[in-house]
Image 1 (cartoon, rainbow, N blue to C red):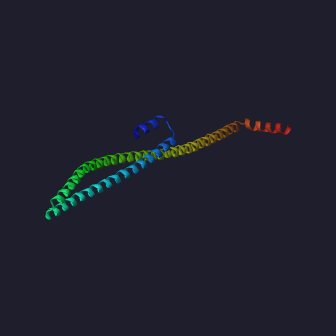
Image 2 (cartoon, rainbow, N blue to C red):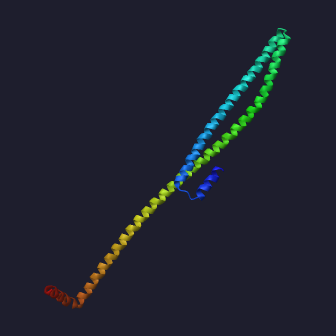
Image 3 (tube, helix red, strand yellow):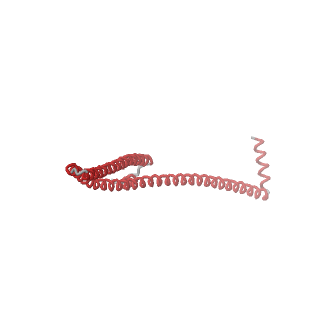
Length: 194
């Protein structure tokens, strides 16, 4: 299953942030393992190219020795070195084919590694972006709660002031009727007698 399939399964399961962290740790671990495998493959390619150059040098050396033997008029030795050169050239042709296949394989693996690395990095970046957006939304929520709390307090104070103003108007209306003084005197007499 590919990385996208795992991400899709992760989000469909409604997993928490911890499981995403676990997934990212696992993906990073696989990325490190992939990097080690890439290093080994590249090392193998370098070794194969070195062996290829060694066989080329051996073939060239055999050719030179065959020419020197021919100049000395030693046909048997010249033939022996030419046969060795032919064996080395056949080996070289086979190795060249293997090295080119190995090189193509390493390049394809390197491309897959880079795609996987990009996917993991993008997933981490998207996660970080989502966490930042979540933190921003949480901060905005808290600010809105504080603002709405302040607005509620202001509304409560306004209503309290309106109630006090209404009571004052009521008292003023009672005072202006004249009954107020009589009632206040009556309240004072009752309080005194009690």
